[in-house]
Amino acid sequence: MGQDGFSILILGAGKATRFKSAYPKLLHPLAGRLMGEYVLRAAVAAGAERVYMIIGHQAEAMRNAFARAGLQFIEQKEQLGTGHALMVARPELESCASGVAVALVGDVPKLQPETLRALVAAHSKERAACTILTMSVENPTGYGRIVRVGGKRVRAIVEEKLATATQKRIREVNTGILCFSRPALLDHLGELSRENIQKEYLLTDLIEIFNRHRLKVAAFQAPAGEAVGINDRAQLAEVGKQIFLSRAIHWMKEGVTLTDPETTYIDEEVVIGPDTVIEPGVSLRGGTRLGSGCRLEPHSTITDSVLEDGVTVRHSCVITNSRVGAGTAVGPFAHLRMGTAIGPEAKIGNFVEVKNSTLGQGSKAQHLAYLGDATVGARTNIGAGTITCNYDGEKKNPTTIGDDVFIGSGNMLVAPVRVGDGSYTAAGSTITQDVPPESLAIERGPQVNKQGWALKRKKLKSMARK
Image 1: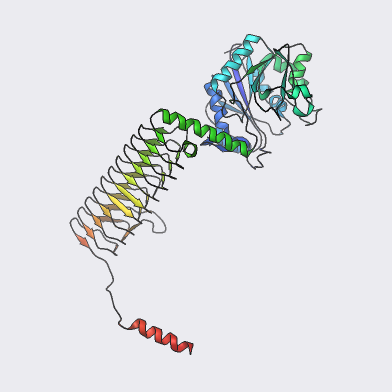
Image 2: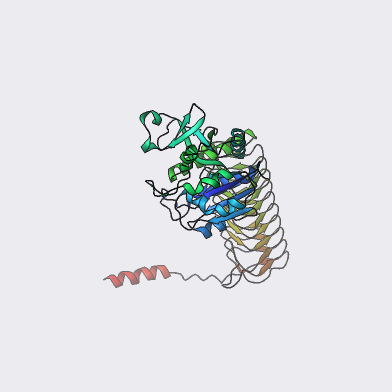
């Protein structure tokens, strides 16, 4: 710690004005996580001695979303600009032992920890009061231009509307990320004024203040595209595409086939085995793990689930908090819900929903079934149109089906109920009692055929119309 260390203050108090949103910008989802998570993780990974997040708008929601060990929140109850944010943080800055303080905007999700460390190193080498993280852009319109003296020291950040024609041609621009000598920051923070067009305390006004006091202001340029901020929802979507595409490229290099990487959405914690094939429109979310040799057909969404080797997921399935055994086929249009475990070599077919249930090896539910709170053994067949009636209006009840069972089509299994190994249930049955092993259960009302009933009905309707 001390003069060689640095602390980071993440600026996250503002409203998402250009998002036209009731929520702070940092709470908007981006490529599988909240936007604020990206800079927060970068700050921690960079090795900051202390990490602060300055919050204001919807402060409680921000605390709930980002709270973790080692992060200290500072509430800016009245949002009067970026400079005001550091004024509010002054007590923490005064007690902080770090020699360097980095003011980090929260909307730069592509910023890397290595760049933050390099910024601090460049700042220390230059012995500057402030070092601005800059970037070079092809079209600098809208950005504050970096005006240097003799090609090195920074004289000013000139905003677009105040820039001369010559200054508007400058392509090096401000990212909003500033690295300060903490003593210099504390010495001059009080000199900020709201006497400007925005009527706010602006952190960038310290550049002019430091120059006025003959303190050195330097600049360090970030790698291309890394420090681009997100100001509206169009940019949010564009950066999200870039992040998803970079992850897709990573997995293709690891031996995964993506037939259309630009329409495949993979969260950062996902792990995929080699020789897996993923078709367009697939979303892999959370901590999902895929084995090798899997095949995922278009438009399926898999969240926080494990698919073992050789699993096939057919078109338009939803799998959440579930485990699918090796060689199993799921779908099309199947839904595996929380707590489901499907054994190896099983088959879950079209329009089958499974919730909080287990199916043993080689079991099948091929068509139009619902299995909720059920335990199904190995090599059992669940007929089309079968459901477990697991909810009695007050609580969920279990259904237990043994090995080598044949459940006929259109069965209602009214839980709690057990069907023993090797048994059969007849089609159309409502099973309300336990079925012993190696038995046949039939529960149907007797069929009554009333001959001529339809003809008589037609004649009565015809007479009524006359």
